[in-house]
Length: 184
Image (cartoon, rainbow, N blue to C red; front, side, top):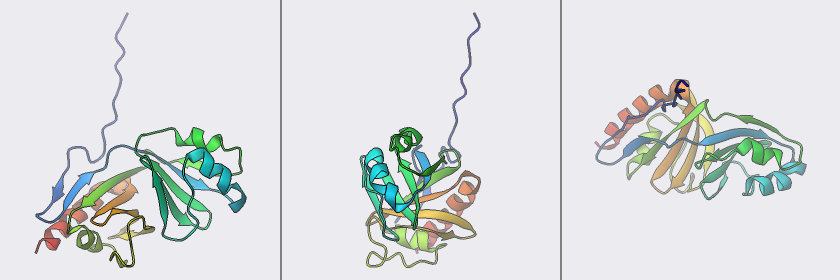
């Protein structure tokens, strides 16, 4: 019997690294993601099924055990699971009205960390990212250079930059330039 070859998908930024003396830029590990839309009456059931409370306040997120729920709009969330769990099945088990789309292969993420992380991300993002305005757990759909990103602050000096795979090289390059400027 013939051996069957299995193709392994390589990350779009696999093997890339960047940064400077004050910041490190690395591709995030693979994750599963869904874009979730739901009315207010479905939030309790969906929160239970997903294992974390869906935030309802702008620019906020909730995280537990490698799973993040990011508020994107009044009835919209980006759910990210760093353990690559089946988020579609979890959402479906809620038994509540919602719309979920798997965007795992559309998106990728870049981790920006270190004392120069804020300045690095601000090199292409017009938002005030100071801790007072954009604290740990804050998230936002915003722009970075010429592309749309979803930004999550995971620690005082760490950001997760979610972008479409097709823009990943551009985002990584612009972040690398910002890291060099942050070191000056």
